[in-house]
Length: 310
Image 1 (cartoon, rainbow, N blue to C red):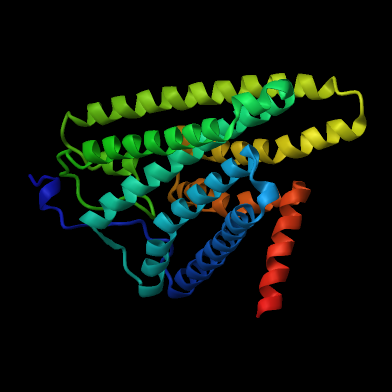
Image 2 (cartoon, rainbow, N blue to C red; image 1 turned 90 degrees about the vertical axis):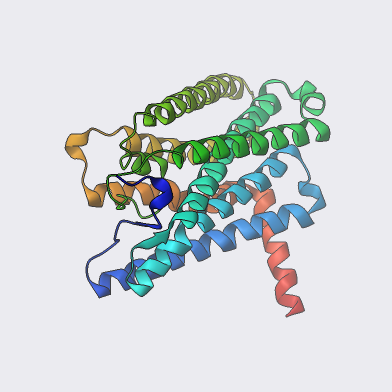
């Protein structure tokens, strides 16, 4: 019986069986990752360079773009490498690093999305207190709390997961290292400790989700009371992108982890994992830029300046 310290590498899920499909997956992942890098990079640059965008909403959007960049850079490069070179191997240390950074950026993303919901709630429901409740210091403290809690969350789960006794092979049923699939390799009763941590984390996430739902109920009630149609349209234009991003993230991740075993299949599991781990970082910049005129103008200004210099 071997434990985790004697395992030198894991075997990731093969994306395809034929060489043509492997190259197709490589090209798809390359296109999605380039779109994510370009979109999130433009948002970060536009917010950092545009002084008129130095507001709480865009400050948190910048943090969201950073989490998107981090999450896609954690999972996609190794999957592209394996597809290009027709391999499934990932070293033990690389797998541990992938688990840590994926948990770190995903939990930070959900924390930032929750804070952004609070920002929209204060902006629409308590506009007179906006400057006080969301001062620059308060925003910095909330962002720091989101990143720090994500770091502790990822560190705790990674350390606990890789302290388990693993004796059910090396094959993971996922194209990147993810905690639930590593737990399936465990033959130790201590895996219940990690399941307890996951259950506790799920309760915290559910609490954040309830807060988001409650906040949006209050937001929509306040928006519907706005007398002018232009005012309602402006309020909806700032809320709908955030709501769309949350829905995409929560629905796909929840269905992927809670779907009935009867409908589970390797192809469905792979598609769902791509939907919640790879697609959102590429779509989030598009969702936000389509509805936000200020952000679109800042991005176009940034791009025109770049083209003029070159």
